[in-house]
Amino acid sequence: MIFDPNVILNHLPEIISGTGVTLALWIAGMVLGILIGFVVATLRRYGGRLIDLPLGLAVEVLRGTPFLIQIFLVYYGGPFIGISLDPIPCGLFGLSIYAAAYYSEIFRAGYASVPHGHVEAGECLGLTRFQIIRRILLPEMALIVLPPSVNLAVILLKESAVLSIITVPELTTTVSAIGSQEYAFLEAIFLLAIIYWVIVEAAARLGRLAEARLSTFRFAAS
Image 1: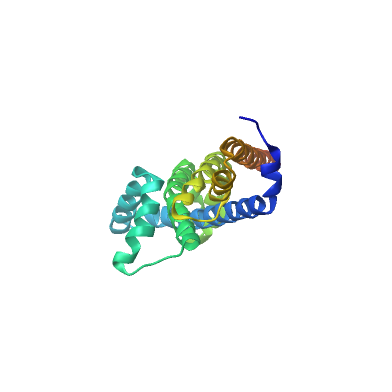
Image 2: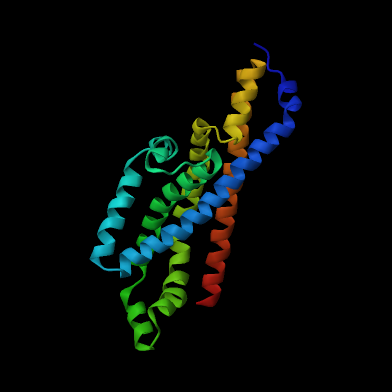
C-alpha cells in the first residue's frame, strides 16, 4: 500500500468544508454548553431542593451515558415524541446538552471553592445575589474553572466525531467518505489524526495562554 497525498489534495475543498462544520459545531456547542451549564449550576445552588433534585438527576443521567447513545436517542427517538431534527441541529443540540452536564459540575465546584466569608462580606455590603455572583463569585471562580473547562473543550472536539453516525457533514464524515470513494483508507485515517491533533493542540495552547493571562491579571489586581 502506497501513501498517495494527491487523494488529499484532490479533495481539499471538501476537507476544508468538513473542518469548518466541525469547528462551527464544536464552538457553538461549547458556548451553549457553558451558558446552560452555568445556569444549571446556579439554579442548583440557589434554587432550593425541589430544583436541585431533578436537575441533579438529569446531569447524572447525561454524565452516566455515552454520547453515542444520547445522539441515537435524540435523532432516532425524537420523531416518536414529535421532535424531528435535521442532522446539524440535532448534532448541535446533543453536543450542547452533553457539554452542559459537565460544565454545570465544573461551575458547581467553582462555586464551592469560593470561601463563604467572601459571600457574607458581599451580603453585609448590601449586594444583591446577582451582584454577588457577578462581582465576587465569577471573578474568583474564573481561574479555578478554566483548566477543567479547557480539558472539557478538548474532549468535546473529539466527541464531535460521533456526529458522523447521524450523517452530519463534519470532518470525520467527509474524510471517511473520501477514503471509501477513493479506496484510500490509510490517507483518510492519517489526515483525520493530523487535523484533530492540530486543532486540539491549538485549543490547549490557547487555554494555557488564557490561564497565564488570567493569573497575571489576578496577581496584579490583588
